Image (cartoon, one colour):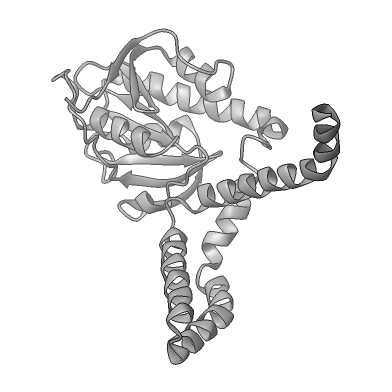
Length: 266
């Protein structure tokens, strides 16, 4: 009897389950697009206004609820105009998501080769550098701390940017897809204690950004000329240029070699 009951319920409810999962996934991807942009602040503001609107309805504040209803009616059109650049960037980034990357594997390999070559040159010259390769979470909020750029990734350009005493050599380079979108940018330092005192500001900034986003952050130490990669709050040290190329191209999903360093709250 119980089995027959379950057989009756499954055909009725499985479409609802699938629909809920699909909607949740779309909302999750939408929020990922907004993280790191001005639009995220608007989403928070809309949520606050929505709570105020329903509160006004429950309290029967006629004037306030009427005003808020006008805001919601015309605010959507205003948001499309004001945040047109963010919407355009979000659509452009859709083609760079993990779901679509199999269609641009050759381009990804080319970018990995250029960045790997730049890291090798900088390491050999003992030139400090930090490069953040954007993941699914946007890095727009950090562009304003430096100089916005729109240039194709190349080893020559990256090496030139980090040339000592150049105007942008102290900050980070931000990479999205095959484009450099910012240089001389300031990244957040890790908020946790780092036991290794030899790690400088670049390494702490790499850890900090990797804790807040899913970016892959590459560092060349000015003192030791070693290459490090920070990802998901973990720093891999003493890596080689081929390892960097393999990681960025997707030939390997995670790093096995190198010395691991992680920050801790204690």
